[in-house]
Length: 164
Image (cartoon, rainbow, N blue to C red; front, side, top):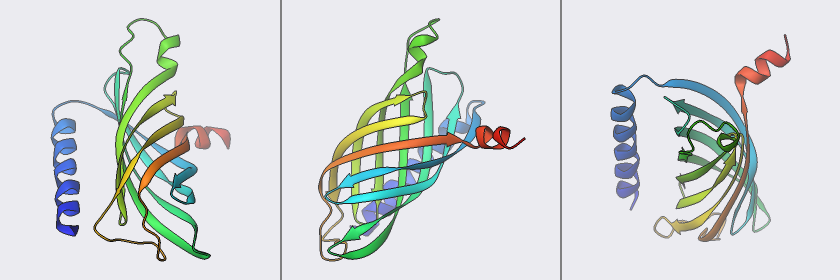
């Protein structure tokens, strides 16, 4: 099962590498913090890279750490995620304040496809369903089922400008 996970990550990497090598994309760095419910409550801290050519389709790659208590023991899990933000409203700036989000996230314990909405690409609300990787457990508890994410993404340019 771990080989399938590595194969999936490699395929996603090759896909995005091919996509970004054909066009001029601008990249923006973001710091993210949020809440994840995955059969347990977790706090999330990490970073994301946002790639865009125009503002109709935006790609995001992210990595973070999920931190929480499972069966009265503190645990930290790494998380990787891939998101595509979609909004095809032309020539109307107000409608580009929100995007539909389709993506997937994975840890060493589960994989979860997800859908949701994001406001300016900064405030995300997503939901999905997590599938456990093999018999992986976190402190004796298998993480599967409904997955809910609430995330705040802060562009590093904003942080830099704030301290000038």
